Image 1: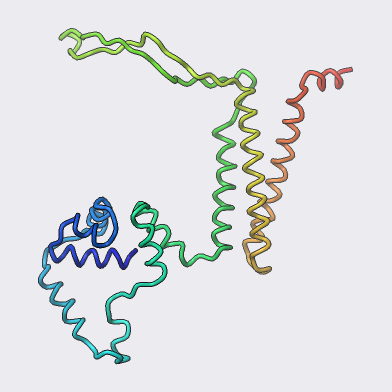
Image 2: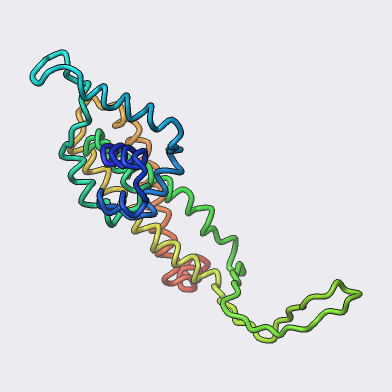
Length: 243
């Protein structure tokens, strides 16, 4: 992708239009405009730049070892692959793909483990239910009537609701949704950890972090299982304990 961007920049210096550059390199016009803004393309001093480019091309003879590393950038398999996706994926996505090219499968799995674990911890705060009376109320649809304001009130139009539709989630519903989502998330995390342990080297220091992480997961899972079991028959359990 970087090679394609560099070639597109050279065409931009030559005075080609966005549409021409996009068609030549198989990208969208918005992609070309994004490159121009992101990398601050400018045609100032274009003649000097063109001259320096031609000077480089007239360098060492073909086959000369001294010319190695000074020629135009070569296309590689990554550039070909990204060229295939460049018509369909945003520029930011392609740049992320470039950055992760050097990461191993173990590194990628470790990244997923951290993201998944962070999501589980964050969900504790987002989905927290304080007590059985904790209710969430969110406006879903509304209809309004508009009335003109007097000049004394600043003029304009005043909006007044005449019909409102709310989505209400009771504590038990929110908590049940949270438990189900938490259970699925922890199951996925355990699967990722298992893959990491199978692929990582024995001396990988990240294994130590997984030990504590797994302990926290098992503790949370036990708490979720206990709460789920209690929620199935809350009345019967309480009666048996009091008898």
